[in-house]
Length: 357
Image (tube, rainbow, N blue to C red; front, top):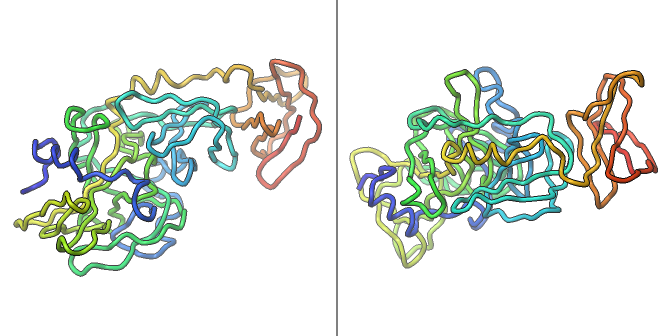
C-alpha cells in the first residue's frame, strides 16, 4: 500500500499508531541529514540562497526549540509542556515567560515573554504548500548506526541546533488527525546531501517555505515522526531515518503494520502542524503591548531626545533584573515601571548590559 497523505487508510494509520510525538522517542535528537553523519554538519546558519530561511528566529525552549512570531511571543509544540515562569533563550538573552495560550484542538502553544524581541518570523498563510521546498530546524543529536540499503537508526542526543532541507509531500486534514491539519514530508535518497527529517528533540521547531514574495515564512511547527520500525515482529522496534521502509513493520509492539514491497522506495514520514490553517489566530495572539505590570526599557541617543522602547531586552521579575544587548552605539537608558524602581547595580558582559533593581 502506498502511503498517500489524505488517503483514508493513511489517515486511519496516522490516528491509530504511526505518529510518535517527537519528545517521546527513547532518546531525543535533532534533524537527521542524509549526506553526513558529522556532528558539526549544518550546525551554523545556512548561507547563500538559504540565508534568512528561519535559523535566526529559533530560540531554545525546554530541550527543544520555539519560533518567535511577535514582538513578545513565540510558538512551539504543546506536548513539550512548560508553563509561565520558564525561560526562553533567544539571541543571547534569557527571557522569562509570563503567559501561555493554546489553540484548542491543536498542538500549538503561544507563550508571551517579559521584554521584547528584536524581530520575528512572518507567517506562511498560503494554503498551497505541497511540492514546495522546505527548510527545517531542530535541536539534538546525530545519525545512529547505518542499516544497509535503508538509512540509519536514530543516534544520541547532543543538544546542537541543526538544519536540513526537504519538500512538502502533502497534508493530513483535521478530521483525520488528533491535532488539526498537519503537513507531511518524507526522507528520500537522491534529494541532496542536506535532505533532512525530524526526530526527537525537533518538537516545536519551525519549518519554513519561500513565499512568492521571496521571503521565507513559518509554515509548520514540528509535531511527530513515523515509527518505530522493526524487520520482524520478534525484534524490539526502534526509531529510524529511512529512505526505504519497504518490507518493514512499523508501530508499537502489539499494533504493528507491515509496509509492503512496492516498485519505488517509501521514506520515513515527518509531520508538522500546518501554520496556514491557524495564521489568523496566531496574528491575534501577538501584541506590541508589554504584559501588565512589567517594567519597560527605554533608550535615547541623548538626554534631549525622546525616549522610546528598546528594540530588544529581557525582564526577569524574580531576579529583579533587566538585560539588553551590547551595542556600539552610545545611548541613555531608563526603566519605566508601574511602581518606582531603584537601580541597585549595573554590569557589562561580553554580549549584554545588566541592570538590577
